[in-house]
Each structure stands twice: as structure tokens, then as C-alpha cells.
Length: 283
Image (cartoon, rainbow, N blue to C red):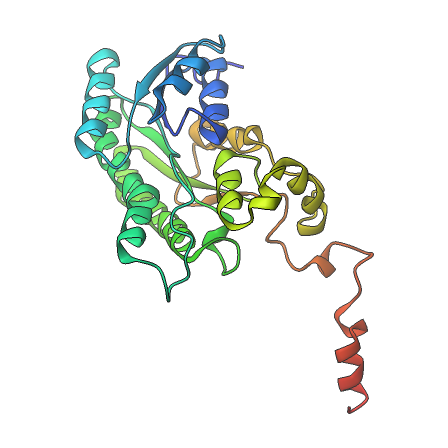
């Protein structure tokens, strides 16, 4: 397919995981992709793989001047920007609210939420110059409820979702669509890093661990891959979703459809639980 022929794209966090898979997919489908990451070497390695036209760039998404300079260079070379994937992220602070240092809270918000607002703000003039565009932001299933990630990460991702909705409303007049993807259990470095900090023994073989827990956690009995999310991002970035804005796409294997009893016929019903039977008997 060549859905992105003639399109100019910028992918942040492109050296690994979801960003890497998305940059490769967009390039294979015809886009000129600027792959940006703090790990510029990883972006060069991606460019050398031959997926298409990929220009590596060094970028810290919390650095406003650096971010602005990159988009200015893209605009100077290509006349603007068509696609922005605000994807760069990190696990952030792991502590609960009663022990977290506010400096760690702020740094987590800078990477996960402020960077999305910054990237969007800087991309708007470049997209207007091309007659419009598509912005996709990486949120998370952690945005929807407690228990899926530490509090700072979860709150930041919830902010990304609401930012996506409000920005979509404000930018529609410029023919700019804004949507989000919400990954679930995806085999990426950010997940592995988080496990290393919380459960070092399990993180020794996190891929094997996730392969085992996926069938227990969600209806689709496999751990998600970066490519699963990349395909969703490509859809939201392309003209295939021309009538879609201000919303999100869950890429979670059904993780949020309901409790395990909703999709696993072997799982005991709640009224089979010993405590439920005791209550029914008036115990």
C-alpha cells in the first residue's frame, strides 16, 4: 500500500517499541518519515533497515527549543508536516501519591503530557502550511482506571486523552484531526523497564512472563506487539480515518471489556465464590 505517498511524518520515540514499528510502517507505505528520539543511534539503525525514506533525528521532547528547531527544519525542507505521532514516553515515577516526590511527578508529566501539548502546538503551523494534517497521541489503558500503572503515569495518560479531545475541537477549523491510541499489554522496552523497577525477578524474562499472563488478563490470548499499535496509528493518520477525530482507539486485546468472568468460560461465576455462597445462606 502507498497510503502515505507524498506525506511528511514525524514520529517521536522512534528508536524502539511502538515508535520504531510505526516509523517503519509509515515509511513502507510511502511517507517521508522523520524518526526522532533521544537515542539518535537507534533511529540511524532503523533508517539503515531499508523500510523507505527515514531521516534520523536527535530529540528530547521536553526540550522546547530543540523540538521547535526540528519542526522548523522539516518545514524548511518539505514545506510543512502532514502527520505527527506524539509517542515518546517513559515509565515515570513509580511511587504512590503518599511518597512520591513532586519533582518526580513534574518530570513524569513533562515527558508524558507536556510533550504532547508541545509537539501539537509546534506542529500546527507546519500542518496548516500543508493544508491540514493528522496528529496521533499515545495514551494508555492506564488512563481509564486505577491499577494498570503507577499514579503519575496513569494521570498523565488520562490527561493525554482529554487533551486529544479538546485539541481536536480547536484544530478542526484548520483541517487537522487529533486522535489517540491506548495500548494495553504491549511488548516494549517501557514495559520491561517498569518491571525491572517493580519486580526485578520477573523482568529477567518479561517476554516469557507476558506471554503467560496475556491469556489470563484479556480475551485475545497473546501479548500485544508494537506492530499491533503501529497499524492503529497508521489508520488514524491516513485518509482511511478522514471522518474520525477527537477520539481514541483501544489496542489492548480486549483488556478493558470486563472482568475475566465476562470472556473466560472456565472462570467461576461470582456467585460460585465461597463468600457469595455464605452470604446467600445468611452466614
